[in-house]
Image 1 (spheres, one colour):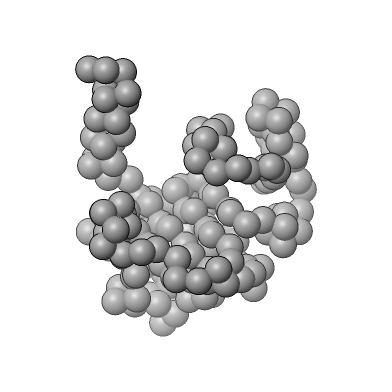
Image 2 (cartoon, rainbow, N blue to C red):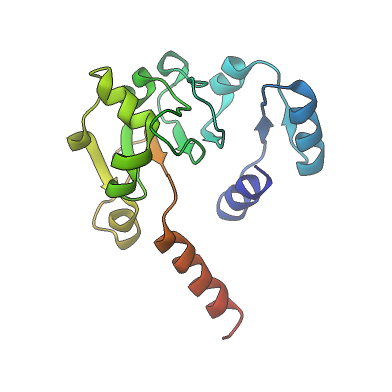
Length: 172
């Protein structure tokens, strides 16, 4: 979680970060270490958020489609198996979905796999993968009201790209 907050703050002018965890003491400790605000009510926090980043090993949805509002971005980087999910099928259905890799998503993205099983989504509804976003082959968000969702299950190519950027920045 700390690295997610650092990454978003490095890329965007974020003024307020809200931290929620199943256990209040966890969210309070993390919030204190990040100059953030701990919250106890996830739905109330979702009502205020522009960007939601989830990094859990949850097997049941924490974020529900009914809680999403226009213009939000949902970043799902936790659940990485077909039995795990951080959002419900309604959240997937309401969103324009992007994935890190299609192959990884089909094998491991429980959020999407379970939404398909519930007839709320299909693989053909994925807007683009990370490569298409990075190269500009897909423009990303189509309008300010669109709800976007990025599902990552992790891919070695992402690690390689970051390593190359770090080496380049270090002058190697």
